[in-house]
Image 1 (cartoon, helix red, strand yellow):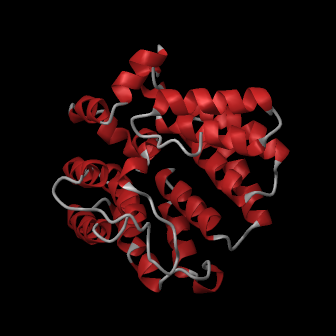
Image 2: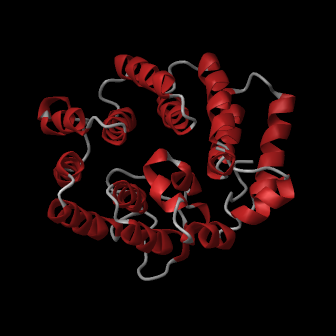
Image 3: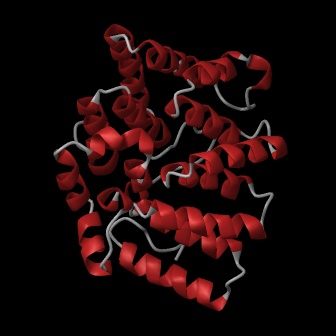
Length: 263
């Protein structure tokens, strides 16, 4: 299932992942693969349940820990998400993915002041991350606290520029824009990130030094189903976007509905 490009092949990828779990029900990686698949098609509750099982099998995997926090949050299990991030931070206080997951969870759950405190605390920042990445977060966090239009616009201008630099930046910028009420900007970034319209988003996630690439064929549709992008899902353009990405066809073929349509 890992070798199958997910986007546009969700039905096949899901079948392969489920077959792997039938063969090896105690395989945490197979559970992770299926959880990633479920999140990619908006089945966040199922993704969270699968990661509960995976983390029980591999409780010290940073990858599983931070993904579980995100999916618990997306599944509406807020207390579980808070508990999970506390546990993850105790194990890996300086792991970059866990640090940023905690920061973003604070931002998107009404605790931007605490997130800002994290960013400004240079001592406890994860290593290997350019200072620019932290500096560009500050305007977003300030805008989230004040909700002043001028501050929001300034923050989104910075994030729009960042979206031109890498796929990970674009994922973040899309969420920031939607969360701060700049839905047009969020859709502009989405068109570039998923469809290469308007501008091209490079495959590199952040910087070449950090490593990590997300090809156009593997762009992360799970971003579309997080609480941070709720404003995008309420917009009339969302149906057209998920149809063009092949998600509507998947839901029809699988006979399922994504969580946001069942809420």
